[in-house]
Length: 127
Image (cartoon, rainbow, N blue to C red):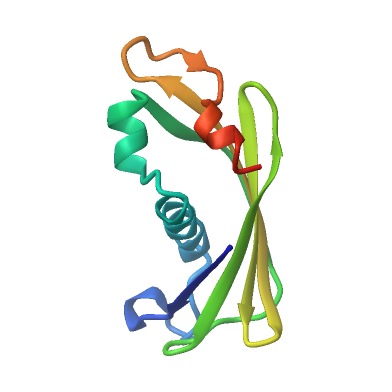
């Protein structure tokens, strides 16, 4: 799946380059878009399935800078999934240029008990 966006001025640092702390936010936006495109926005997951998806690990490798006004795409996919954990891979591109790569690992928490719960079948089908 591909999520598209442009860089806003407030996301840049004194050098006019996107601050590194924004890439995790971009990844989160892309995950939200992914869930919406699959017909299961995060609000529905929380309300209907009574789970929260929590972030356990995050890594980013920076290759090239993004600047104010740049348009970019995030290619994302679920790269692994087992009974309790799943991961997304991200590749950020400006045109054909690879800007950054990332990975996040998640689990599901039952909202009532606060305990880890199995990944719901509706999410498993997206692997």
